[in-house]
Length: 251
Ligand SMILES: C[S@@+](CC[C@H](N)C(=O)[O-])C[C@H]1O[C@@H](n2cnc3c(N)ncnc32)[C@H](O)[C@@H]1O
Image (cartoon, rainbow, N blue to C red; front, side, top):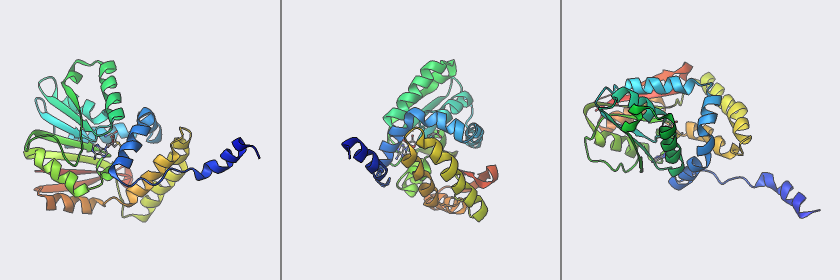
């Protein structure tokens, strides 16, 4: 048998090892960065834009505010926040993936809306935010909490850098307690998301999605965790029939 054919036969065994630690996750987000936005639009049929608008609206960011978007990726939530806070406000987008940040920054240049000049990008860790206590009037986080290795620490950091009376709005997949919704979610990932991602050579990376939702917390658990960390109120809203969820926590 030719060595080429032997390699082809062996290829299915060459799977990436499972995503475990923070550096595995960082590598994953660097890898998927070039196709992340295209896949988001395609796989959610554009609905992620609506969910993100809702998340920003729940943050209660207003003109002139100084706000933070944690795990900003290619910047969708930061761009929406920028329009809310306007030219007198300031938006910081933070992520630990340099590739995602460079896409965010080139989108900022190419979109060239004057208000987007109020956005700055910071390479940093959600579990050790490089900001002083009580710095921000509002904080958003989209599809980040499920991906950090320590959810409690992430919420503690959000609490620490948020000003008193301000809100954090945290959007993510919902770990539903409804078996039917869970089955639909799992079916969509296995039969739509993974096959589409595999056409970009990213099947293993998107297979991680199911596992990360299974290991995530339910809305009630997130509400309780936010209260334990010190937030005065926390409410989890289900979106799109329970497929997505948004935690709103006030300091
Ligand atoms: C699924 S993407 C979401 C991106 C964007 N918020 C959105 O909604 O389109 C998750 C992002 O979280 C970032 N991330 C994960 N863990 C992180 C951490 N500990 N510190 C900073 N960023 C992190 C990843 O690099 C990735 O860009």
